[in-house]
Image 1 (cartoon, rainbow, N blue to C red):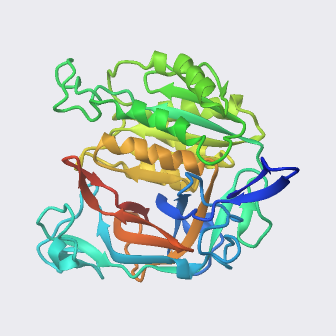
Image 2 (image 1 turned 180 degrees about the vertical axis):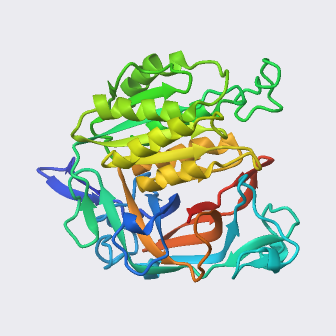
Image 3 (image 1 turned 135 degrees about the vertical axis):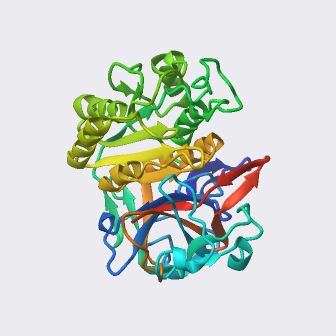
Length: 429
């Protein structure tokens, strides 16, 4: 909450006062999108998709129902003080994605889907971002919020109100599954590490794991928590380990159980087998009273001839009741994604992240960690009807305004420290 009850004893004669210290300047400052989930994943009617997200405040806390913000009369309540009018989208374009993960380019609109346009970044008004000077098959999107946001929390309902629900779980379990292929350090070429061709030469995947645990302590107690890990070469934790809301104890446990065993990349990517093993580990050994999540890292396509393993995982994930699934696919453009990754995530109403540089992993893991505690959903109409069975990327700017503050997110291709980062949101149709 945003206030603190404190006792202050005056130094004068006989003065003893109890006062409420209010953080009157708390504002929303950061929007952390988790991505799109299917329309069946939330209780919205007449929508094209559902955007899942979190919002951070200036006190480094998650925005939750019941909070008091600067400039707001009353507290944050879905449909009352927080509604469709508080969320705005602009500069929205839906890019069609080819089978290899690259944006579909064109010469004329006749080669695009029905309803799509063939435009340059300048014609779309995106010339300030880092899109190649080509023509792309895109849909002009008019994103509108339908109804009020809803909030889901894994513990008891923080505020009894419409649009707020709890998963009624006493804690959280997260299983991590990590690709360990030789492409990560570039040794797939000749057996020696080569930063020039490596997908993650600076081991951002390790930084991202640390970021996950650091995020657990933001704004509130982490609560009961346990974890497991599984690498694609079979190395990992023997079971599921209890963690602690105290960061120093948690990181010591994590280092001894996982980070100290972090294997050197080698071989190919038996990612379906690893994902199945990681999933069964938390299903068989995790606390059944806890909410369960599986977070998978991969840097491209799985091993060839993995159809049986793929089918086994899809069957397992479909029957795994209440499993939250997040998939981080940091493939080089033109070398992925595998649509089946996104399909697997969709079965559990999870989040699929496809991006072109491993340096984005820490920020995405921050979002994934936030989502293990709770999230907001909004239903959207897009004003377009693209073909099903495909992947799309939505370029947009979304702004959430509450009280005196505003939080925004640019889902675009941007340059940061000479690295082009693709923050567009992945839509699975």
